[in-house]
Image (tube, rainbow, N blue to C red; front, side, top):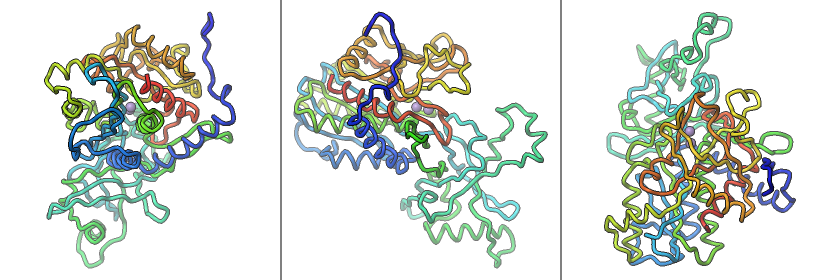
Length: 464
Ligand code: MN
Ligand code: MN
């Protein structure tokens, strides 16, 4: 490694063959991003590719699991776990990579619909940390599920196909924004004003709320739902943009939901590929793709859900290992984990918020965050020297280009991932993922090379 440390730019050491495999990987990743704009679609996509690779639903399994067996478990359609059984007993520890599949977006309120100035609109409530102004005056697609009075589930996906209409939220014209622009940036967009326009043609047979009535008729015809059914729905608006390579050289990729689908995709792709390439894995490898991280990992589809313990107990039971508490505790205690989430990269326009030498630069490798949190490391997962050294040695051995970053200068802000949840169970955990610009915006930016390096890093972690 040399006496002095210097950051490496992946592109400077990438040969032609590697470059081709990189673009092959990211072409598929781009299609995935455009397909999987919600946690639902993400789960559905991963189920599909896992099944194609021979993973079996753990719930439908008869008999015991042995080394090389591949299973998955879906938790309430919104999160998915996958495992490849290794040769060692589970209680000697597993290699786990955990990512999340939910991204900031605009959810609808339970009673969302109203009409004003000849337009029908839906009231929204933002999900996760958004800069509200970024969601105005852009094309939005509508995704979700809704139940009708008969209890039937209807899926709504509209806005992304070529001939689909889409939706939008208005922004005030600059000519009349003098007072608005005097307000502080966190106040100048009232979240109660973030209603999405969904129609404007009146039903002339009605006396009042003519447009709303017309839209309700269209919704009823298309989806068989009534106004009250919005209350029993999970409907959200997401950007309609297509993901794209950025720059003449295609060195970057922009798209919605890369936090954290870039790491989720890499984790699933890595577990599939090692299960196909490696005949025998020493440790049982697990990919966890969980929901609700952006709102604090609470709830029955989040990392905090006991569904995870149930999954591990199930694996223990099926590998002829007693699933008593002790076996479970030992499994947790002896496991190693990568919390696979995005990290911030230095923004060339806002360098002042970063301590550059402790920050990630796009293109300089998979980003390791030894600790997260805020201020005096509050709420941080603080990876130990021992475990950090293990990861560095592993990556060095496998020619993985990595860098170390922190989430900006101390006291500039802060944040966390699912890392602490598994660390609290006794595992060794470190944050390691792709670094990103414009995080939580409708159009997040990553480096093509970092995305590919993240996948290679996860593969090497699984093999150990
Ligand atoms: Mn994230
Ligand atoms: Mn996030």
